[in-house]
Length: 500
Ligand code: AMP
Ligand code: MG
Image (tube, rainbow, N blue to C red):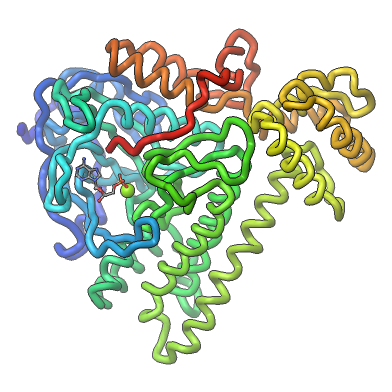
């Protein structure tokens, strides 16, 4: 490990705050160097936004930093402690078993961002794991995370991916990789639960203060800052899950340790976008009971927030019965906030600028027909952008997505009737709809193709193409139609694997 502060090493304008918290919040240790760092991709735009110099990051010393072989000046590497409920089961100690936080920088918008290496070697939290990441999951996280950001969803970001020149042992031997992950913070509901389980009130207080100062400064002004914190985190989770539902994203492992208090999508494991719509869709091979199915995501988020509330209760005053009542009210407010966000999102997706009493039924009717007819989620909504409000002449593009094309006709007529309450021209409506109904999502079969090309052939060009195309998800698909097409039956991905 080279600890370098010379001019050749890329400079990170670190301004670390988590490392100032008490030592029991983390374990200090550097990343473990890898055999042979090789750059796969640097996210130049993100580097620039973080005030980092792309050129020095892609130079050999920069790549060493991204692989964990060299520590940039000012880094205070550490593995964070946290706990969590995994599939509903309490695990008192998880923590960063393969991730090292290098430090924090302030981005060009003035927002503090963690810079973390994922797959950076074993830590005291590794349990039986090797502390490493396989190439496939690193590419998946890079593609999915950046696509989510481009789709306008709150998410952690991917600054870089590097190969390690080492193999990791999973079901087979696989090439290893390291992802540089950027987050508003890596503090999870499970971080609070770690200290709550230890009845470490001082730690909960310090952590809550840290989170308020960092993510929710307005909560500090409230009469009860911790209740205000709970409300703010609840609001962001409600908005986040609504944004997932509206693009058909299934996280797959919504454990409390994968629930960011900053409200970002975090820990892309066996996640996937739905192809054909069905509310009970599950991809993750480890989710055998469908706990984290598409339709359960809002309930699970609310359940996770209840766990967050429980951790905060000791800070909410002597009268715990009153505190429970207030916290319960906040948790219950999730539903209203979520429904409002989701309903206004559905209306935008259908091109409805105004609100009518039966809009929700119109959405539900469409979704039911899609489910019965295996209609592709993304393509159905995108096709709807292009049909006319006064004629069914151009309905074929949407009809052919349904097993029985006639199954959508009646709905189209209802929708056209509803459009009579709107005032926009078809052109304006279409344009507004195209801004919320993506043409490009990282479809599962494309992600699988990207991974197998890289892992089996060392060919990263499909990866780069998919990252490039999904960077403009709402754009004109001309020339890239192959990325918009739903999978053929033989291409459908039925299951995703954690593959950690
Ligand atoms: P995840 O499934 O990635 O959310 O991780 C759940 C827990 O397992 C976290 O505490 C991780 O740090 C840990 N973990 C996952 N993969 C590994 C690995 N290869 N080595 C060590 N710890 C791991
Ligand atoms: Mg996790």
